[in-house]
Image (cartoon, rainbow, N blue to C red; front, side):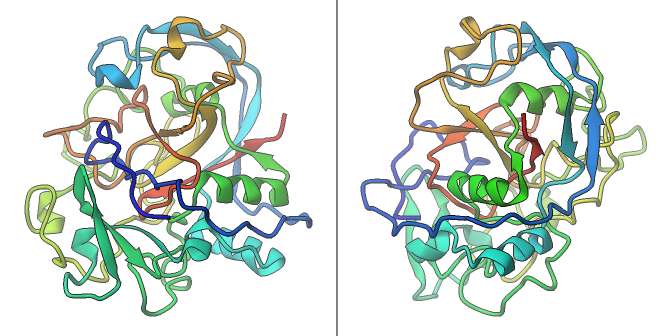
Length: 326
């Protein structure tokens, strides 16, 4: 992070954008190739209706019009890239993430001691996001113990779009297009809000996705500063049931980077076959929602929901998964 940009359209469940007016020191180029360790699910591809058929999203997110899309066959990670997977990449390459080079990243305020001298400021339009010195993928809450071991099976977080692309170069993988991501998240279902149907939970009330739970946080959103210091807000990558394609947690837990640039008008002119997003745009698409989504203000964990932020942005609720390289 390089400070917070004032991005008024950012919703509370999303993540603040980095202020890119201050340069972050350049990353060391990734020149080696390693082994991608995440289990794969082959997907046959085909036609589906992309977008929100219920027009329930925020108008400026551009979830409509719902339109037919065809995607070619590809393979996708069963889970997001986990902390242990990212550690293997770093151990092999010596790569330093955007947050490590910038010296700070965005952390939800309930996970931070309010009196800490490492709190550098709050996001202008989402003050529950604090910029914390020393927060990065090893230290998701700021300075303290290296959490790689105890969060090894959790999604890696505090990774920017640039970091995700560096991992993909090393692993000979790619970030999914937005169309690939939504096709996969739907799990073979058409016209549903989620990858398992329209209800957020099973008939017995069992959790199907990991979003904001007031009981877990001790209060309604946005919780209280410092109320859950040191608590892991994420779940392990394989903690909840998979969708019909065998893919886990494509709703909730952490936001996932896509390769596309963002344009709220894109669906009006998007190609039918394997759309790869617009040619221009300062921000990149995020999909899937996170542990901070709540039905009282935002349902961006629906499979049609979209968000976006700058490629240099990193936060404690942003991760990624990969697909086979075209």
